[in-house]
Amino acid sequence: MLLKSYDEADRITDKFFPEFQKIYEKRGFKLLLLAEQGFSYFFTTRRDVNSLKDLGKTRFWSWKEERVPKAIAEILGANIISLPAHAVYEALGSVMVETFNSLLLKIFENWEIIFIII
Image (cartoon, rainbow, N blue to C red; front, side, top):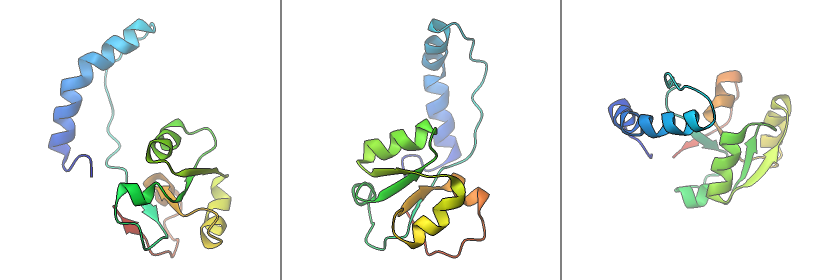
């Protein structure tokens, strides 16, 4: 994990918030606050994934227009597969998609797949 606790996340946010404000102000916006959504986890159907490097060798699902998961997948070197959400479950079963982030679990909580959490 990059961050191991909410206290650690708060320290990072507090340290960089002024920098974030400057970036927004340069673009004509006023940043008032950053909202937390909790930790994000990545899940994979592959049993041989034990590190971020291994995760980068998987087929990573992302919403078509979702920039953050796409950017993370690109940083990891993962192959990005963009599909509508309703097609992901079948794609996981056919190995077309092997990895996704926790946002999708919030949508489809009843999937019966074995996940590895890194």
